[in-house]
Image (cartoon, rainbow over all chains, first blue to last red; front, side, top):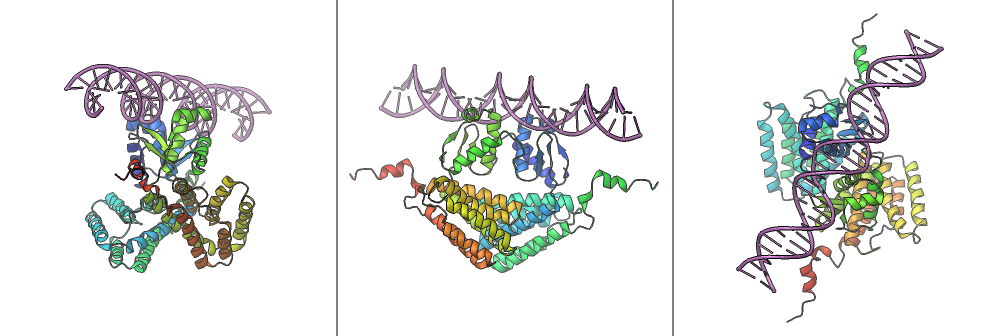
Length: 229
Length: 229
DNA sequence: AATACATTTATTGTATGCAATCAAGTAGTT
DNA sequence: AACTACTTGATTGCATACAATAAATGTATT
């Protein structure tokens, strides 16, 4: 938990949410002063939040140059998605060994929420889709596994923000339903396969993006607007 | 990496090392003032280090009460060891899919160091044994996997400090050699099995400690000394 | 006009001071 | 003697001041 400072938590949480939802885009500068002003706290607390976000890979702090929203490379993106596959595979295995009743109940309740928000509130829909995966991890009862999944889901959101075009990479509600169904049957093999396919789909929609934004710097953009002599 | 402050890194690193090597024992208070004095830095930098260690699970910060060396419960201990099994299984699978030549070479070089330090320098021997596992993770080439393994190996060291009697839980050098051999053959199944057995051995020696400290509270201890009416 | 150098400005790095909080010990009441 | 209320000392929470650094701008020199 965030024990070090109660008052810096809102700063941390708001920044985190803003990054995940792409309100703060990769590369954007995060000056301590202005953030502190908007939250009504001193730079000390802002700094705490930024250091934490840096440790989680959502923010990049460079000495004497300050913090900015992290810009994961495509290589890091693949690395993180692979790790996510590993962690969520573990989640599936563990859940399928447990008493499925209460687990399925909790998952179906969540799925209903996802369904309700589907066409209505895009941002909420995306957030709920991510939280489905976090809920799965929490239901294993493993604190540390849940923490890792939580962290890696955030980082995947940042990756989507960087590489995917809008709305291309939402989790499908039916795919979540299929995963729940496999868990209900205690069928670990199917659960793992479906989760793998599900994540693979998200990854592909995100990373096999034809218009790769790796080269989206000022020079590259302006070159397209330059008059042809 | 530790980008937020060059000068607080030594504080962080020393504390970390001291905790892992049991010089600082679980539950021991870590006051900002005195630590700052010993390192010649202000409380600000000490605090940075402590917050980081808290995030890594080696230190426990409680609001307005300061930091102390974490005291993982036995339940957390099992949780962490299970997670470690998961992560190192992934390491084994990945390494066995790679070109084994350079990997085996690096591992054997490390093993030679372990061997050299064996009866001579106990502390160094324990550190090298832990670093063997970190090296394995690094050789996968996955930054994030290596980070997680690094973190979890530290936490396991803390657990050993809390629950195992001295020297009961060292990694055996021969077991490391067997793991290397399996990797050399690209035999994932054997590599995973051996790693699993190896870690299981460490865990058992640590956690199936006959004198279980879970009940080491005043009441439990005194009950053994109570006269039988 | 281009380059190198100097100056200014903005932002971070760190120490420190003051207020808030907690732990412990003291005194006073029943 | 036990229990509460108060006081004191130590420690943390946070804001702020000042120093250090880097980026941006301006100036001079070729």
